[in-house]
Image (cartoon, rainbow, N blue to C red; front, side, top):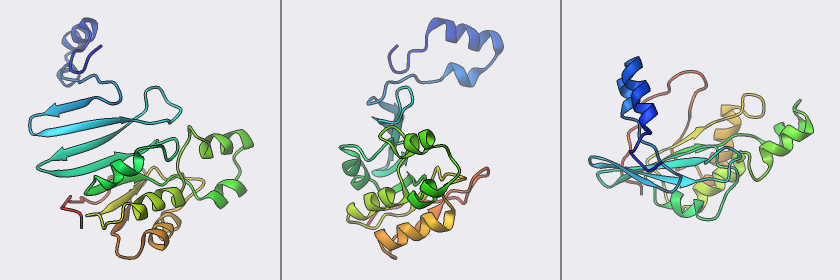
Length: 185
């Protein structure tokens, strides 16, 4: 199934059930680029243990925003993607000490910290620090409700990435503040 080519049965379901927004769904494979008028969306495959995991880089007017969650681990090329961005919504899933000492069973702890799971606060902060620039903003996302806190995640980022980086934390269960993407320094 190619990008922008929904299967005939999906179109029939859309029309029959009157879900017009589903009729305009764009199908893609990780690695595809999608164009929506002047907006371009690059999809980047991830090693997360999901089916065809993907993150997104949205470009409009020369500004680039990364939506980077469910990463699996810090994979080859991820640093290059991060360096290309002006702002980033970035997974910072767990604090290693909280995960190690927490109540999750060993197999789940291994899955979370393994190569198909999630990235830690430290790994996330190093990606930001190693980009070697100040982003318009960094919004920490996909924080574990059991193995992280907004304060721990933000503190780790400020410690590793430096105090000059604008760090926000996406709230759980509700919409956060509106953040505007500007040119990174």
